[in-house]
Image (spheres, one colour):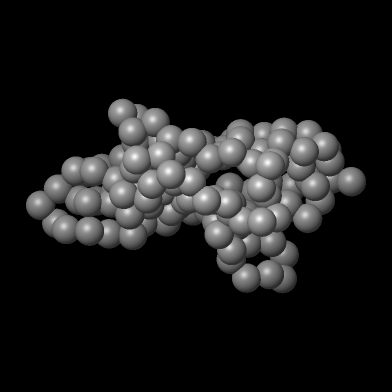
Length: 120
């Protein structure tokens, strides 16, 4: 019914930048909060950043000042701009969204993830 597809991951040197994108598609009536999570090697999945439909944001302390989350409601897309990347940012990054599905109610949807590798 609803899919989230991430893109933009890859290999980057420490200090570099990447921009992740996540596009939602399907029978979407509207989207509530959209967020990025990550799971590093041997670690639990953690919230990186979230943005409400009205544009309010919150960030994990570890990424404040380096990462910026934004969204384009017309395109049902959320972005994560990552600057000053560190090796500890290496992880699979997952997109997450609370979606009001046409004629079906509310779903929390996850993307399949995109790998970000930061080399030292």
